Length: 70
Image (cartoon, rainbow, N blue to C red):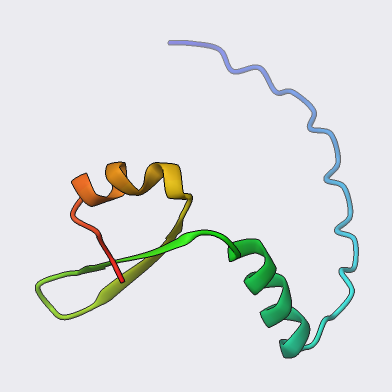
């Protein structure tokens, strides 16, 4: 039988409030983040389509995983 040793935990840091941004600002941020990337798709047996934004040098690796370029 082992003996348990209780260690005191450090208190969790409080979460900081994140400024709320509009939907339009979210779209602009996502477009700039994905700019210059290749859009790749993969469809499963149920018809669901998975979308990935891939750097152009990684396209070949994603094609090997079953994804195709739009």
